[in-house]
Length: 199
Image (cartoon, rainbow, N blue to C red; front, side, top):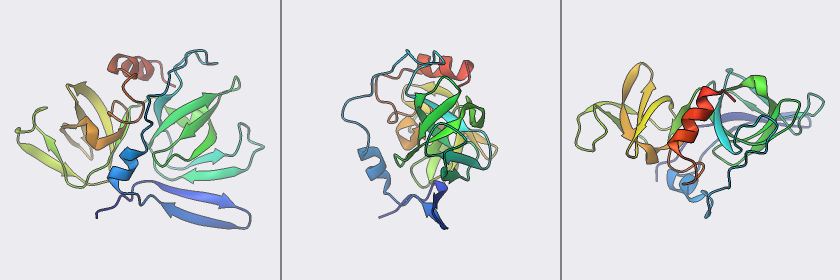
């Protein structure tokens, strides 16, 4: 069975570092979707919905065990643009984030971006000229590629990756405007509003 290898992160522990890669099948990642879509809360310090999807701003992002610089680094993400889910906030600009694997940790708001990105979950995913299954494929994307999401239409996403643009099924992604991460309560209109107001 083909396997994912799409999140590069380092787990910090006393005295050693362990490089860890995601190796769950794509179907298993999708199976982790909650049975009931999470309730979107607006009573947050920022006034923005929680949960919501953002992306990592830098090539290296330190993520801590608690919401302050005094807390030890728990994870170090090594991929700029990686989509993550904000699941909690503090009044002093810390954000608790969750990745595709379900790992959670805290990072400062300044480390996050409102740019909408999504991870490819399928190997050889065709980028099509139009949002139709019969449209010609302009390129193919490998599992783990980070794409910039530009538009959504009828279950399809228009994305850009490595200079290539095209349409692919929203179900083939994890991240902004993909079908799985936040469940059916999270509408395209909300996603657009969140992107416009940053994180």
